[in-house]
Image 1 (cartoon, rainbow over the protein chains, first blue to last red):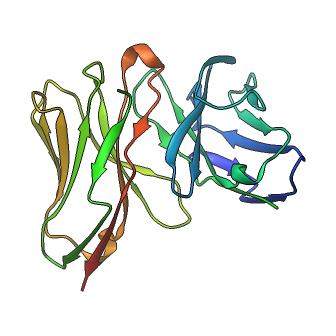
Image 2 (cartoon, each protein chain N blue to C red):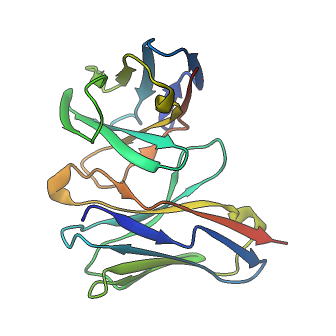
Amino acid sequence: EAGVTQSPTHLIKTRGQQATLRCSPISGHTSVYWYQQALGLGLQFLLWYDEGEERNRGNFPPRFSGRQFPNYSSELNVNALELEDSALYLCASSYLARTQYFGPGTRLLVL
Amino acid sequence: QQQVKQSPQSLIVQKGGISIINCAYENTAFDYFPWYQQFPGKGPALLIAIRPDVSEKKEGRFTISFNKSAKQFSLHIMDSQPGDSATYFCAASRMDSSYKLIFGSGTRLLVRP
């Protein structure tokens, strides 16, 4: 069974641009979580999508947004990129359970 | 109150030794405590998890010990191997808060051959 996949693996943008990151959950999983892993800040919860709806968001500004599609895949959009947005963005999926399975991440570099 | 504090920041252990990583939390509403292992360039992988109604859980060489009254839990890696060298994260979540994981700051483990 395929695990959580994320694309692209690496993304380089400049300040002020927009970034779009994609996540495909494990087949059968309906929940998608996004986390940011920035150097020195650890893993921080960004967003939770379940059954196509945003259910919860972490302490991040509104320029971090996303959506979940009918096939349960998800997209994270980061607008007006700032240098401090450089981080590894991790997606995790789960289904009616506490266990979250993580993908390999997208490494975003903002120049 | 949402924090999970993890120690040590880094740990060096000889092959065959026991690695011990500790975590502490404040919020008594947390009801699920997983440990994740992360290798460089990879996403975190679930190692083992425990709920507060259990004081210990063992899976192979990995054991979680849980002390509800002290609000502490720890990961023990028995017979540590060089392949265990990775960063380990403890985490906590609560059912009434979207199951989002609150992570500790991580422990970088190096097992010397």
